[in-house]
Length: 186
Image (tube, rainbow, N blue to C red; front, side):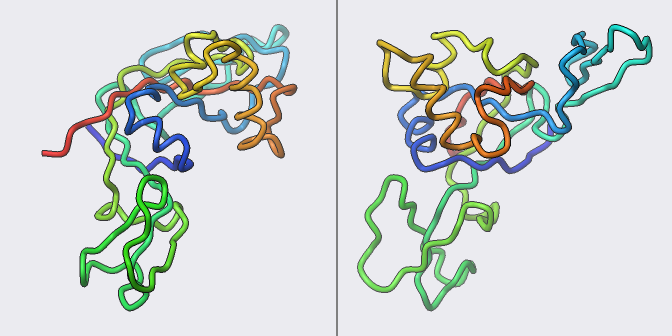
């Protein structure tokens, strides 16, 4: 079992904590070409085949993990100004779900969250590869979407707000679909 960090926005952190979000999609980099087909090799490897080239290009989910591995969530966090991101006081606040405590606080971006400050650990249940637009309404809701009347369109809007500059919905990128469960603190 390995542990790796994964970044989530405040809205998605709330979805995880409320038990609504149990799936995340992450863009495969580099993207296979449009004329490639995908074949599952094992729990962490996929092969992309060109129609005119019998030599496959292999893609692995090792960056995120395989079933049984753990992901610790990086989110925006805050520490007292006189204790910027150290363990001196142990005081950490999470703007996604908490009002900042009294006093002077410095909000830190999720990318700079160290492991000791993380409050959420996830266990990977399954990893699969698919095109983004293959998402089902059921998966949209498992992505944390609240709009149960139009989850597909709500997810499309969410996707573009997060990934639209590099990987817009219309480009239909290949993605890792990572199913997880939130672990209780022990």
